[in-house]
Length: 114
Image (cartoon, rainbow, N blue to C red; front, side, top):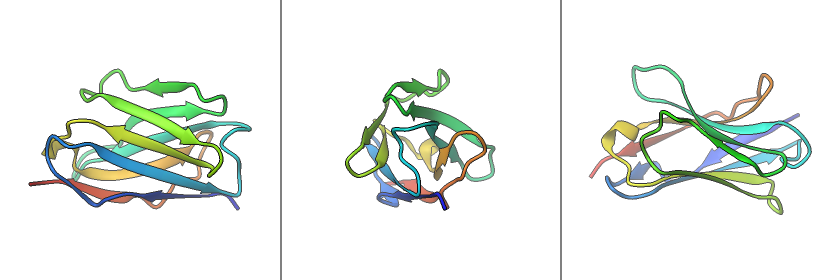
Protein backbone atom coordinates (compact mmCIF):
# COMPACT_ATOMS: atom_id res chain seq x y z
CA UNK A 1 0.00 0.00 0.00
CA UNK A 2 1.41 3.34 -1.04
CA UNK A 3 1.36 6.02 1.63
CA UNK A 4 2.50 9.65 1.68
CA UNK A 5 3.07 11.62 4.87
CA UNK A 6 3.73 15.34 5.10
CA UNK A 7 5.91 16.75 7.88
CA UNK A 8 7.08 20.20 8.85
CA UNK A 9 6.34 23.12 11.16
CA UNK A 10 2.75 24.12 11.63
CA UNK A 11 3.59 27.77 12.16
CA UNK A 12 5.87 29.97 10.09
CA UNK A 13 6.49 33.66 10.53
CA UNK A 14 5.92 36.10 7.67
CA UNK A 15 8.92 36.61 5.38
CA UNK A 16 10.44 33.29 6.48
CA UNK A 17 10.75 30.09 4.46
CA UNK A 18 8.11 27.40 4.62
CA UNK A 19 9.68 23.95 4.37
CA UNK A 20 7.76 20.68 4.14
CA UNK A 21 8.86 17.11 3.51
CA UNK A 22 6.85 14.21 2.13
CA UNK A 23 7.90 10.70 3.09
CA UNK A 24 6.76 8.01 0.67
CA UNK A 25 6.32 4.36 1.56
CA UNK A 26 5.23 1.48 -0.63
CA UNK A 27 6.62 3.02 -3.82
CA UNK A 28 9.86 4.56 -5.01
CA UNK A 29 9.96 8.18 -6.11
CA UNK A 30 12.59 7.24 -8.71
CA UNK A 31 10.72 4.64 -10.72
CA UNK A 32 7.59 6.37 -12.02
CA UNK A 33 5.05 9.19 -11.60
CA UNK A 34 5.18 12.84 -10.74
CA UNK A 35 5.30 13.68 -7.06
CA UNK A 36 3.32 16.82 -6.41
CA UNK A 37 2.57 19.50 -3.86
CA UNK A 38 -0.97 20.88 -3.66
CA UNK A 39 -2.43 23.27 -1.11
CA UNK A 40 -5.84 24.49 -0.04
CA UNK A 41 -6.18 27.82 1.76
CA UNK A 42 -9.06 28.11 4.23
CA UNK A 43 -12.34 28.52 2.36
CA UNK A 44 -10.69 28.28 -1.05
CA UNK A 45 -10.03 25.70 -3.71
CA UNK A 46 -7.09 23.46 -4.38
CA UNK A 47 -3.95 24.98 -5.86
CA UNK A 48 -1.27 22.95 -7.60
CA UNK A 49 2.18 24.23 -6.56
CA UNK A 50 4.55 22.02 -8.47
CA UNK A 51 6.05 18.59 -8.87
CA UNK A 52 9.19 16.55 -9.23
CA UNK A 53 9.23 13.55 -11.52
CA UNK A 54 10.97 10.20 -11.23
CA UNK A 55 14.01 11.57 -13.07
CA UNK A 56 14.31 14.55 -10.74
CA UNK A 57 12.93 17.10 -13.18
CA UNK A 58 10.92 19.84 -11.51
CA UNK A 59 7.79 21.69 -12.61
CA UNK A 60 6.29 24.77 -10.98
CA UNK A 61 3.02 26.62 -11.15
CA UNK A 62 3.34 29.76 -13.28
CA UNK A 63 0.78 31.44 -11.03
CA UNK A 64 2.71 31.13 -7.79
CA UNK A 65 4.08 34.48 -6.71
CA UNK A 66 6.74 33.15 -4.34
CA UNK A 67 10.12 31.66 -5.15
CA UNK A 68 9.51 27.94 -4.91
CA UNK A 69 11.80 24.95 -4.78
CA UNK A 70 10.99 21.26 -4.91
CA UNK A 71 13.75 18.77 -4.25
CA UNK A 72 14.18 15.16 -3.27
CA UNK A 73 16.31 12.85 -1.17
CA UNK A 74 16.28 9.51 -2.94
CA UNK A 75 18.13 7.78 -0.09
CA UNK A 76 15.18 8.54 2.19
CA UNK A 77 12.48 8.29 -0.51
CA UNK A 78 11.38 11.83 0.34
CA UNK A 79 10.61 14.96 -1.60
CA UNK A 80 10.38 18.47 -0.22
CA UNK A 81 8.84 21.87 -0.80
CA UNK A 82 10.27 25.25 0.06
CA UNK A 83 8.37 28.53 -0.29
CA UNK A 84 10.42 31.61 0.36
CA UNK A 85 9.22 34.88 1.90
CA UNK A 86 5.78 33.65 2.84
CA UNK A 87 2.87 35.86 3.83
CA UNK A 88 -0.36 35.11 5.75
CA UNK A 89 -1.95 34.36 2.37
CA UNK A 90 0.16 31.21 2.24
CA UNK A 91 -1.71 29.76 5.20
CA UNK A 92 -3.18 26.50 3.93
CA UNK A 93 -3.40 22.77 4.25
CA UNK A 94 -0.50 21.39 2.23
CA UNK A 95 -0.75 17.99 0.59
CA UNK A 96 1.79 15.80 -1.10
CA UNK A 97 0.30 13.70 -3.87
CA UNK A 98 1.36 11.03 -6.33
CA UNK A 99 0.21 11.68 -9.88
CA UNK A 100 -2.24 9.47 -11.79
CA UNK A 101 -5.01 9.47 -9.21
CA UNK A 102 -3.03 9.53 -6.01
CA UNK A 103 -2.73 8.59 -3.28
CA UNK A 104 -2.72 11.81 -1.27
CA UNK A 105 -1.11 12.47 2.05
CA UNK A 106 -3.41 13.43 4.89
CA UNK A 107 -2.32 17.04 4.62
CA UNK A 108 -0.69 19.35 7.10
CA UNK A 109 -1.94 22.78 8.13
CA UNK A 110 0.67 25.50 7.95
CA UNK A 111 -0.17 28.89 9.39
CA UNK A 112 1.81 31.96 8.51
CA UNK A 113 1.52 34.30 11.45
CA UNK A 114 3.73 36.50 13.52
